[in-house]
Length: 89
Image (cartoon, rainbow, N blue to C red):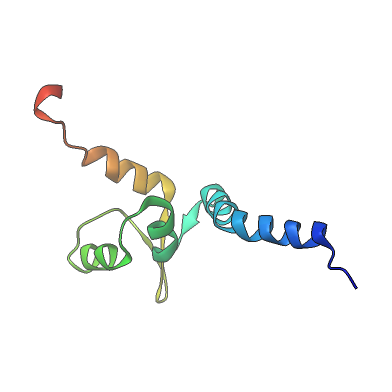
């Protein structure tokens, strides 16, 4: 029996697009976990945890032991901590 090449191709495309679909799904969510912030913004989860324990970093919401970050708070933090280069001053 011959393999269904169309189905094999569809599965390869699905696998190739999975990371893009995941980021697209995350970009629509309002509240993000530490790992989701890492995936979407590129900020290391360990860095976020350290900043939070030191009372620094972006605002967060805590539900019991679960920590969530609002996108608006992340963007506000990044905007407030943006440094200008010498030629931009």
